[in-house]
Image 1: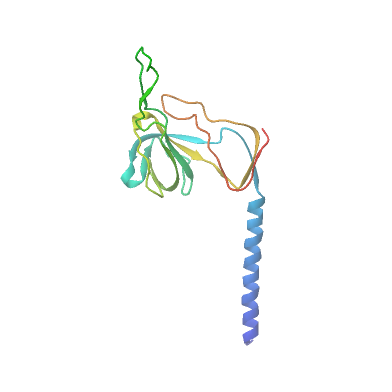
Image 2 (image 1 turned 90 degrees about the horizontal axis):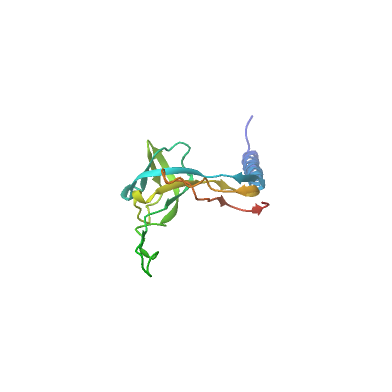
Length: 174
């Protein structure tokens, strides 16, 4: 059969409308998704080397890290503290990058190396217990029981941090 000009337009319009409704219904489903969360929701990775010029950190393991994951790089220790028996005891003498942190997005993982989308903004000293914390991402979430970090492990320099990312609604029921 011969297609006429109006029938071609009708087919294109039908396809466009079908595509619109398919996308709209899948987006509505995504927005309605509420994830119950509790316990330890983060994964922790020991940093063994920081390569800022490559937007890269080398880890003890990269298992469970993937493209587009949100992560936090954080240095847990390293500050110098005055321990003399004087009135200045306990004063911080230098930070030495302790407390530095930033949120990044995984560009790719190669072997033991984690590459980020953007350059690292802070400096990190590996001996100061630097870790990568994988941040779970939710559209909407409901806390159903206590959220907590994995216990701090001074040997591996991991744990002790709780971080989540919620795009829309976070309901605190615990």
